[in-house]
Amino acid sequence: MSVLFSKKKLRDLDVLLRLIPDIVILMDRNGIYLDVIANTGGTLLPPKQLIGKSLFEIGIPKPLVDYFLDKIRMTLATNEIQYAEYEFPKQDGIHWHEARLIKCGKNEVVAIVRDITKIKLAEEKLRDRNKRLTEIARLNSHEIRRPTASILGLISLFDKKNMSTENLEILERLEVCTCELDKVIAKTAKKTHLSELECSKKKNKK
Image 1 (tube, one colour):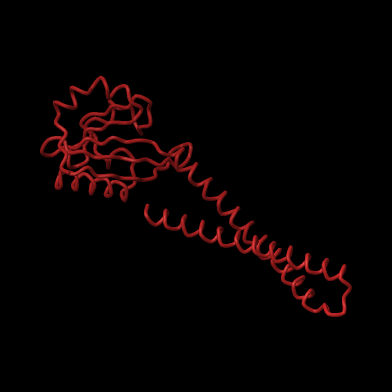
Image 2 (cartoon, rainbow, N blue to C red):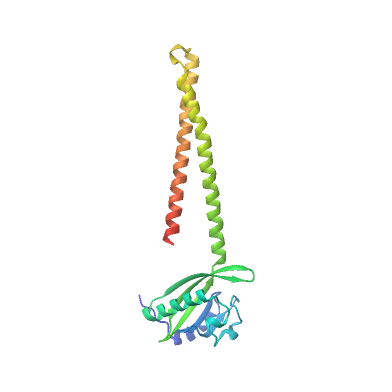
């Protein structure tokens, strides 16, 4: 769906834009800042100092500048909203940002930029936790299943024909319980494997 965001709309929404935490940037096709609204900071320079400068002049690495200029040109060429996700080093560490670019006039775009560092860090912690749980489940599955196989092997060595009724009942009960435990371990291992596949699919979709 084609999207065109007019300058009039931008002016009409000025009050609303100043209430949101996102950074709103009006930029031309060459990456020149024409207007900046940053209510909670987050820009490399104060907004007023950015106006009139290009992406090349404010300390952004060239690969990132090229990436952003490509997004600007795609926005202008297609009239479609373009999405950009990128990381940028700041004094307190790496920050992740998400930007949405909308065409605004013939040679200008509006970029709405959001800091998603907290979301990225939470996702990373979740991945690390899932990885640890997977390793624990895999280790437990292997370590516990080995002795259960040994128990079942030993049970098969008994001469059940010459055992008393009482001992035979105990042995059969032991065999049933060991088989049930083995099934539980196998089920846990299968679920762990399926969880790994689901996580892999979600990662690939991104």
